[in-house]
Image 1 (cartoon, one colour):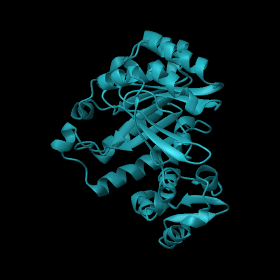
Image 2 (cartoon, rainbow, N blue to C red; image 1 turned 60 degrees about the horizontal axis):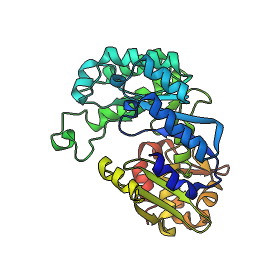
Image 3 (cartoon, rainbow, N blue to C red; image 1 turned 135 degrees about the horizontal axis):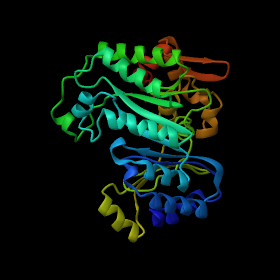
Length: 337
């Protein structure tokens, strides 16, 4: 990974690095020493800001106090814990390696060790009831992290769930869960600022906000993605996905498997696909800043979205309406042309 970073550094030469995110898979399987070595290389190779947000994702079944303390000493200042549920039965149904007691123990340890903590929690789980979904929300709030992510369970391709789908709550029940969780978290001081994200005042995830605001990022590691802007183009790139093949390609100087330029026809959709996940939307002038295009290029789609009650364009902001938030896919489809 360090060799990959060294080879990629010229692409972001001179840019200030505002966040580092160890995520995807289970990065808490890394030793604290490995995290320290990677972060030391980041500091040596890039202008990492002094107060940069440095997040590490952790699985409750793979951590202990020594690892958490080691990660903090290495420079990690924000932990994202993959709780998924505080209910033992649902954790078993999801095939998680941790149980409910381990989830709570890991959560308490994370909150004791790190100043900033996020819990990832899922709803619409196999045979889950509305009351059980709310119980997870209550337990999460009782623990008191500064950030919560509540995701609808998605059946991803090439997974056992996708091949043999379990019995899941219907769409109406899932929607009831979403609404009830949003209302409950709002009453307890968590601002709903992105489709699946809730934060106490001033505690939004800076790294994730960069994604939603169509900012640039450099991905290092097997299967990592990057989005990089230059004076004349915006590109995306992906790295070799299989870990063994990735390591072999890094040694050959070919970690990047594919690079492509985002065409002008695609930029409108790509920008909106990110920006409209934000509950308060984005400043209207951000579109031109990020894409180099005038917002007038999207005037037909914007007008249609406004007429359908899905989008608001007022006070120099582009913002999904409450209806647009609920039917985000339909809203985004309008920008595909």
